Length: 483
Image 1: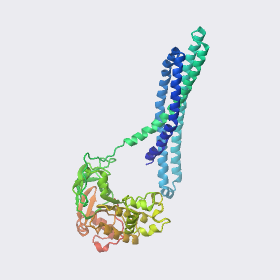
Image 2: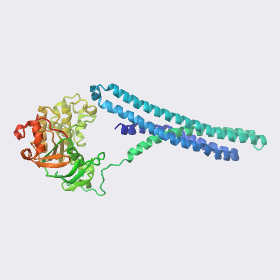
Image 3: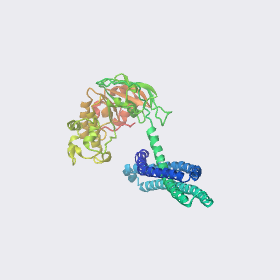
Image 4: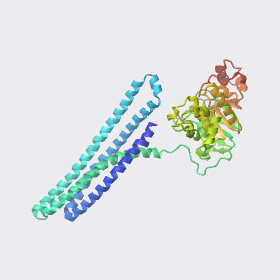
């Protein structure tokens, strides 16, 4: 993340600075350079021709050093990005760093990153100074040689002293403008390194294939979800299947809970359905339409995700909830907040719904963040709800209120729940037990307790026996193993 932010901020600032300041210098020096060459030709075409033959010999080394400078400039920007990334990581996890008394370790890591960045910058500055010196010496060396030839012509009577004086004046204009252009060339090479980094970022293409002729989802979307023979492995672990030949049909309005040990592939199903990744095999459908033939944005508009760790943006409560539907009115936002039991604490904030919630919702508790995320999903009014234990961060009273709101919201709406607690599992129309990306079993709670060892072990961990029934569970159930 720090690397990307560095490219979007530091690199663009550098390019803006170079293009803004250097452009005027290039324009002025170029006009001066060309004008002086014309006057040199008018004064003595022979000496001017000799000068034009010598100048390219002086320019070629400058171009070679310029490419070296570009590489160093890019390395310098990379090291700055590394230091920025470390700083952002530590500041974002300051409590963890302090809790492990690791301040000294992180200070040393950041100091090392700064030292590496500084040493790279010093090398770049030295090469740039060498480039400027080389350009100045080369250009003025060529001019001195030509002026020496001019002096010989004056002595031989082929040229007057006045003409030589004119030639010297115009040659100085050529030299000064060439020196200015070489200085700008160093800045341009520095900006070129930043531009390469930006170009790399812009050239990254999404792994999600865009259909040439996208299909629309039926409107209104009913919410039928289908997985047919889906297999998937993450790019970082190509030899390990996170989802293995997964097939499941979810009816419109059905409430399906997905359970399993850690690493079973529960969260991966959501990522595939949201089209964050493409499966290597199989198809996924919504209302019978292959979602790989639908634009990703259209698929996501039919879904609403309430994750376990909610994202709160550094803006007002109004805008955070309205993120689910940007065109929603204030009244609709407030209604969604009421349904999610968020209204009471929001109106008590200093500016009510217009209160700035801070970076990552710094002014809110975990439960308050969760309720805002639920309000966001309620406002989006999707055909399909994806819940990752959406009440996990709430106290018992808030959980009761929000669970009632979710129960109402789930009516006539397809709901998939990644279940870590049996309070959610027991209320599901169907429970899907996953292990290593495969479906071990599906059914109701009582059926699975009786016939599935993995599910029975989960029940035993929570209730201490394998005979738990729906009446045994409460919203304060002990958490199941997460995955």
